[in-house]
Length: 487
Image 1 (cartoon, rainbow, N blue to C red):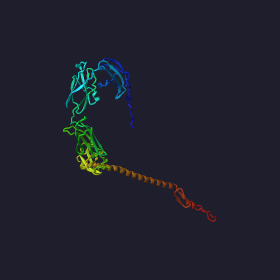
Image 2: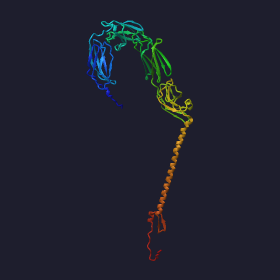
Image 3: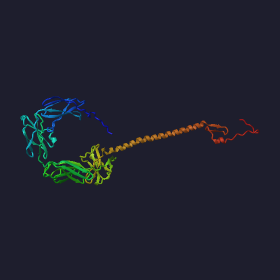
Image 4: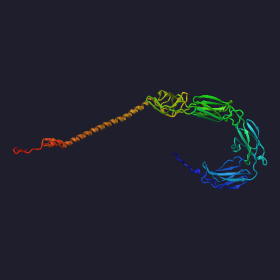
């Protein structure tokens, strides 16, 4: 679970109590109540709908602002909002009206039009000192773009408008921008269509490759968005980047807004560079690169060196890929990692794992040099899978490759000899313990021995067998006629 951290600065208080401190015929001074911890304030003056958009003003370290060059005879809506970092609070609004005669709206006319420029002209406004007036020329491909800002300022009452994009429909208007302004724009802006250039590239090119149907769908829009009496034909050039094979197709003219062409039998692992242009000589093309679904890649790579300098390469074979026949390629690059933009210095084909890299194949790599091994799938068409696993090695000479074996033997003897000695010592210790116990038992039996007066024998041990006790003869009594001998 990922913990969520809330930034307390995201809550910004609302600005309150906007006051008009001072107001003249051409300016107004405003003040508002400070907002705690605010980084600054955004002041947005807004004129009525027929006027152009005014720029937003940023105020820092102050809660007072003076707006100059206010337009006479109109009403301003002024919004003030506090901000902290990139978070804005709710704005407060005030309305300020200015008296006087409003600036006139100007009507613009098209006097001349060529492929290079359009000559525009407008009437002189009445009731104003025209010697000091500055006019702003507004144009754009939409109403929002038209009212953004004046793109050209001039003191003349005509202008050659050049540098417009060909085959576009522009809205054009003129308004007063100085010394007081901006003034309103005309309610009916001029519609200006520029000339069509048939060498222009198509627009909105998209390419989609469907893995299931193995189809590549190419879509684009006409070079000119205007309605034409004659539409151009288009040339599609498709180049497969791996195989460097190119196909060219001509699409016949059509009045459809979106043009479509489909290529079929798109294999996996392909990369295509697609370009589309009109069929006019020296036409500009729009290009993009698209990739089909990747080929299955071998994984579970294992590489280990042998004592003779051979490297054994093993991997998990690809299963359940029936789109095309395929083999494998073992790729060897010098250095750490594999750079797909650089061809490998060694490529070894293989039908199945394992594969072997022989020492003479690595002769170009210096001793102690590093090389990287990877495996990829290759179809019969010549397309490749990605290399998803690699292993890097440092090359050593043959005698160094033998050292690990000698070291292993020495290490084994270091364990074997102490083990044998320990076993012998344990055996000797057990022998002496058993011998000591036998001697101790013999001494105890000797110490507990006694003389049997009846039989004249000496018995070793402290106990008698039960049978001996049971079979002892009871001494018989002496007869009166037998002599008593006392020794």
